Amino acid sequence: MFDVEKIRKDFPVLQQKVYGNPLIYLDNGATSQKPRVVIEKINSFYSLTNSSIHRGIHFLSEQATTEYESARNRVKEFINAEHDHEIIFTAGTTASINSVAFSFGEKYIKAGDEIILTEMEHHANIVPWQMLCDRKGCKLKIVPIDDNGDLLLEDFEKMFTPKTRILAITHVSNALGTINPVREMIKTAHANNVPVLVDGAQSIQHGVVDVSDLDCDFFVFSGHKIYGPTGIGVLYGKEKWLEEMPPYQGGGDMIKNVTFEKTTYNDLPFKFEAGTTNYVGAVGLAAALDYLTETGREEIEEYESELTGYAHGKLSQVEGLKFFGTSANKIGILSFLIDGIHQYDAGMIIDKLGIAVRTGTHCAQPVMDHFGIDGTLRASLAFYNTKDEIDRLYEALLKVKQMLGT
Ligand code: PLP
Image 1 (cartoon, rainbow, N blue to C red):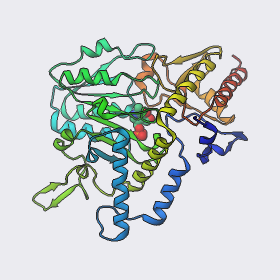
Image 2: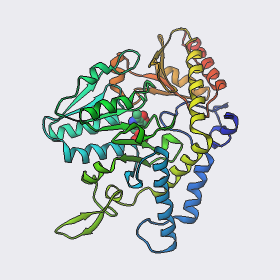
Image 3: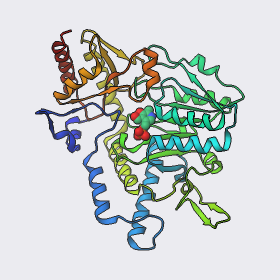
Image 4: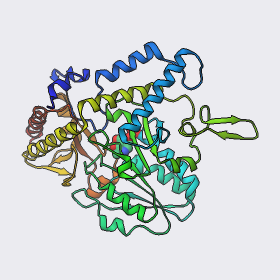
């Protein structure tokens, strides 16, 4: 039985008041709050275990290394990858995508080649590819969306040519909430001999992700959006690609041997982990994944799906409210505007009522351009949110309308 009140007690930040009102945190798409087990794990690691990994022969270094490598194994199990060495720790989704765009681009992309993205990508899955195009003279092709926020799949299928080198696509849109049919899209791409990078920044925290079942070539996500620490992220890559791709950064830990004449690179995964990594973040991330597994990933998915349906129903009762992102297949991201009211004005008023939502373009400017708007209000749900909080958001929006006279 999913007990949301019990779960809420695990999150210290949720226990506070903001401007005299109980905090209602609905900005989970930007970053999620941390359960006590994650905070305590980081505290105990710094208090008892902290030491540089992979380099020392002393007790603490060996302990820290063991914990770091077991965190890698934990991630591997969580996403069902085949090998531990297919899990690269990075600083986050953005760092992971930049790493693939550079390393894959160096090896496989030349002038005239094509990269397929979609109109609903976060800037983190646009700009690194644009930078690659500037360096190499390749070009982007963009799968369009319709007004519900669904991809136009017929257009997608016609986009492949012998020059297509990679498809990079978000699993779930951070601005619209759409869950893309990535499994089928990966099949189509593979039938055209094109590998696929899936941006999982908004999907992995909401349900079970199995990279072996998806058969994606790369899968990336951030620790801070999945109830773990910030500054840590994951790049999963199939061994065959990671083996062939050159490293992204040079420095310590990614080398086997260095002379001024020549450097030989380390084996996977270390080849892609230059310098002192965020080993404390990795250990904290593993604690978050354990917490989610114990809570029940299927149960979380079910609870969030019911809450999303409730939230859509409730907010649609606000007269003049228009949703952006009305796909039949979506997660708990509710992007909306209210007739005649600017998102910033509404956001500022509901903040004073203790409710945190996001305003702006959500780093997805092309989505805003599609709808001809300069931003939305976005309430993004987590499994610690409740129907009561949605009711309070609804009442706050009525107050906004009353105050701004519409
Ligand atoms: N991709 C998507 C879909 C996102 O929602 C985000 C963050 O909001 C990112 C990438 C970038 O994540 P990060 O800032 O953690 O690197």
